[in-house]
Length: 144
Image (cartoon, rainbow, N blue to C red; front, side, top):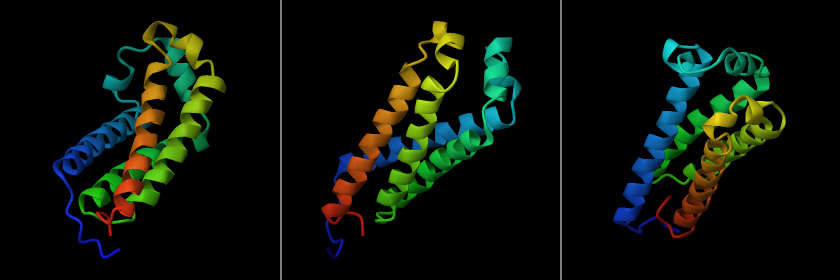
């Protein structure tokens, strides 16, 4: 396709929301990577110990997921087709992280009073939506 299709208002709204969502992920990653006071203020000692014990690959996938998501969001707003595979990369990294978080650690028990399934579910669902949406926009010629 020549990419001459003009995006509608929904495209811009979804793109901006995707950028904000992934930007919040980068913020959370940076706070947890550097263990800022804000990121640990509301956590118990057991919760901090759990997060400190996560393997290096988990942290690397977390970084790839959130930074890849920001770059994908910017690419989508620039109407570049590279957004679709970047959203796939972000989604895969985030999904592996969330599955490990829920089933490979004691996170469910450690964070039991804080709805431990809510954020991992949101991350995967939103990631899947962004993969679908970016591929759909690429197929329609909006992303070129």
